[in-house]
Structure formats: structure tokens, C-alpha cells
Image 1 (spheres, rainbow, N blue to C red):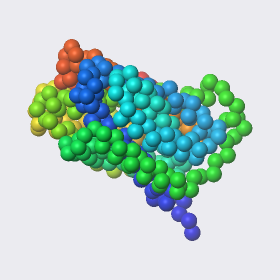
Image 2 (image 1 turned 180 degrees about the vertical axis):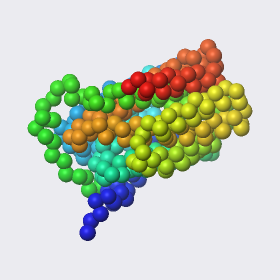
Image 3 (image 1 turned 60 degrees about the horizontal axis):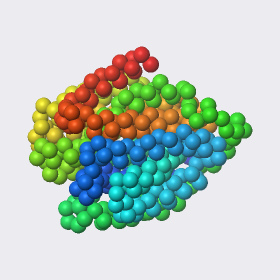
Length: 379
């Protein structure tokens, strides 16, 4: 007898590992690309923020159309072609020898990231039993968390022994292995309804997801800032290798994901979301008041715990609001807000840091999270 509530099926496991390897390649560049831009191309902090933001802007632009295509024509083709192009574009960084070329590569890479992550998440939700959706989304998200822990650490270790060329080459190889595994997934049969096939602008956004997605947008401005500028801030306060920061940040996210999804399924989302916001409000000021090795890494744990609760909980809430034939649009709406927040955060952090320093920017993040908690109460 088949257990309809079984979570760890062959397909769910394969897409989880594929997502892990894709994400490791992605996280290779988070701590190393800002350093590459500064040390090799001579970029200013504002230019670093702009280059990084173009990746997110591209993902932001493509996601609504990908969400429509996923619902209109199915998941498999979009997922696999996006994976192929995403993996190939890592080689482009080797030839991007100016800020302008780097912006072009980041934009193209962002398009494929937006398509790949939206389609991959939608497929993963298709494999998750409804009764275990909170748990399943949290555990699927662990692939990103593990990648956040080991991706920057491996990349910085490679950079310490070799150079940026090998960072880009090894990232390509890891992503290609993920692609090979993805080709072995038995994708669920999907037959789009007649109403989904006809294109209209209103199908690009899932209106039931908008209120929650706006909260996500506010929160992820701080996520974009901390991911993109923590390695630079670490060097400013005397921490030469920020790999441990990313490891502890990921550990916090991972620990909270293990229990947050189960609690979501049992008691609902709102109480646990508030706990996550409180952790972020406490964590970010530590970076300002404790600009040293200890404060830097304590903040990473607390911030990680907060984000680990908030991100999968909001995604599960968004998916619970729609029927399966609108799941692609719902996920694209969620991720569009996620990307927009990260992109704004990159630019905002770069701008604020030139006036108040990175410590001051991180301190202001606590106020941004506070405004998100108010918006949640009003939504």
C-alpha cells in the first residue's frame, strides 16, 4: 500500500540534491564576487551593490513570466533548460573583465536563476503531501541552507589556495553535476487547464499572494544586505575570512528550519513568524555594537535563526492560498518579492554604508524588520 503522506520519495530527494548543488554554485559567488569586483576590477562599494543587484533585478523581471509558463505549459522543460543555461554562464565571469561586462553576465545569470529557482520550487511542492507542506518546504529549503554553509566556505578556501579563475570553474562543475541529477527526476504529469493557456497580464501575479509577498519584500532587503556585504564588513573589523560567518548563519537557518515547518503544520504560521522577526531585530544591532570577531559570529547565529523561521513559513503560507494550477504564479509572486527585496537591499546597503558605514546600515535593518512586523499585523 502506497503511503500518500510519504515525504522522502525518490523524486523529492533527487530535486533536493539537484537544488543543493545548484545553490552551492550560486553561493560560491556571494562572498567572492564582491572581493573580485573590488580587488580585481577596482569597483567602489556602490558599484559592487549595483553589479550584485542586476542579478536580482533580472530574476525579478523573469519570475512572473516563468510562473505563467509553469502553469500554462508545465514544469519540466522550463526547469531543465534553465538549469543548462545557468550552469554554462559561470564561465562568463572569466571573460567579464570590466564592470559593464560583469553587469551583462550578472543580468543573464539572474534570468536563469529566477527561472530555475521558481520552477524547481514549484516542482518540489508538487512532490510534497499537502498534510506535510510546511515540513516539506522547510526541509527542501535546507538545500539552500546547507549550500549557504559550505558554498562560501569552499569558495573562500579555494581562493586562499588558488585564484578567482578556479572559483568560477569549480562552480561550473558543481552546477553541471546538479543538472545530471535533475535529468533523472521523474517529473509529475501536469496537464494545464484551458484557462491557464491563454496569456493575460493578470495571470503573471497571484493576487492572493500579494499581501504576504509584500512582507517578504521588506524583510529580504536586510537579507540582501547581509549576504552581499558581510565579507567586506568582516575585513573592515579584522575578520579576514568570513567563511565562518556564512557557516554559522546557515547553521542558524538550518536548525530553525527543522522545527519551524513542523510547528507550522500543527499550530499555524503567525506566532512563529513573530518569533523570527524578534530574532532579527535582536541580531542585526549586534553587528553594530559588537564590531569584533565574537559579535560578528554571534550575530550570524541569531540572524540565521530568524531567517530560517521566516522564509519557509511565508512560502508555505503563500502556497496554501492557491490551487495547484496557480501554484507557479503563487511561487513566482513570492520569489519576485523576495528578489526585489534582495536587490533593493544590495543597493540600499551600498548607499547607506558610504554615509554611515556598514555597521550603521546593519543597525538600521532592525527598524526595517520592525516595519515588516507592523505590515504583517495590517495585512
